[in-house]
Length: 432
DNA sequence: TCTGGGGTCCTAGGACCC
DNA sequence: TCTGGGGTCCTAGGACCC
Image 1 (spheres, rainbow, N blue to C red):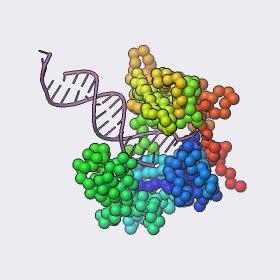
Image 2: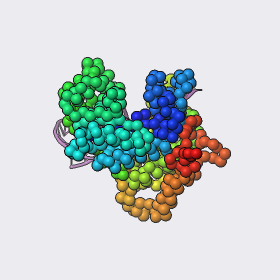
Image 3: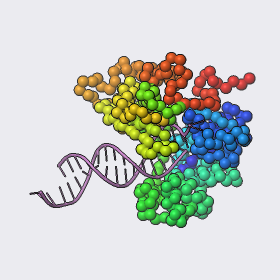
C-alpha cells in the first residue's frame, strides 16, 4: 500500500502560518518576477482564478475582490517543507519526497499494526502535520502510486471525506476511478487527454479498461502501459530512494526570466555567471560533480516572434567538476558561442548533467586529482558563509552588482515578498 | 562495386510532473 | 509594458563500430 500526502495550496498555507489575518480570505502567491499565479487559496479559486494566470491579466479582478497578493518566498516554503517531511519520516518507515509539497509513503506491512485500518493512520498523520507545522494536508491511500494520487485528489475535492481517502477494496477503487475525469489522472497531460477524449475515453475507469497495446501505442510506450496497469491496481513503481529526505538529482538547472529584455553581453554574462554559481552550489550540496554544462538563451514566446525562440549549447567538460570558478568560466565560453548581437533576450539558464559523485574525478595528465586542496577550502568556506548569512553573501566578482546598483539588470521584481520568518535571524516573527 | 545484421552511444525533441 | 522554475523519462534517428 502507498500513501500520498499532499499539502493544500502549499505556498498560501505557509504564508498563513505566519500571517493568520490571511485565514479565510482570498490569497494568491505569484511566481518569480511577479509574473503568474502559482498558488491560490480556496477563496481565490472560487473567484475563478486559475493556476498560471498572468498577473497583469487578472489584476483588475484581484483588486475588485480585494485579493491578498504575495510574491513567492522560497526560503520560507523550503523550510516549512522540511518540517513536514521530517515529521512524516519520523512516523513512517519509508518516505519519498516527491516535490516541495508532496510525499509518497510506503505503507506495505503496516496494516497489521494500525487499528482499525490504514485510514486511521492517515487521519493521525493529517492531524499531527497540522498541529506541528500549521500546514493542512490531504492523504490518499491505495495499492499503487497512481491510485494513491487519484485517492488524494478525491480527498481534496470531497469535503465529506474529511481529507482522507482509502481505496481498500476493488469496489471502492472502481467507484473512485469512475469519479475522476481522464485528464485528471497522474501522467495524462493536455496532449494525451485530447487524444483519449477523441476516442471516447472520458474517465479514469475507461482508461483502466484499455489494453496494454493501446496504452503503449498512444501514451508514450512503456510509460503509458505502466500508467494503465497501475490504475488497475498492479504496482509498477516503488518508492524512489532519497538520501536525507531529498532525492539525489540526475541533472540540475538554474534559470530565470529577466526583469526586462536584455541586449548587452555584459548584462547577460552577469546573469549566466550568477546562475552557474548557484548551480555549482546545488551540485556541491548533493556531493556531485558535473560532466556536461548547457547554457540556454531564450527570447519571448509571445507576440509575433516565430520559433525557434530558444537556443542552447552544450559543453563536455574534460573533467567532472563542482568548482564554481571553473563552471563560471565554461559558462562564459558557452555563452559566447551562443551570443547573437542585437537580440532581445528574456531568459537564460544553466543545466548541469552527467553527474557523478565528486572526488571520483579522473586524473588528467598534468593536473592534481580533482581540485586543489586550497580551492576546496575556499569553496567549503563560501558555502558555509552563504548558508549562514543568506544566499549571495559571498560571490564571484563576475556575478555581483555594480556599486550603486540596487538590482542587477537581469533581476526582477518581487514587490510583495514576506519576510524569511524561519531562516533569517533578523526576520524572525516577533510575538509581543 | 556490390552486399548485412546487430550493437552502442549520443542528441534532439516531446510528453509529463509539481 | 507586464506571461515561472525545476525536474523526469522515453523515443527516434544518426554516427559509428564490428
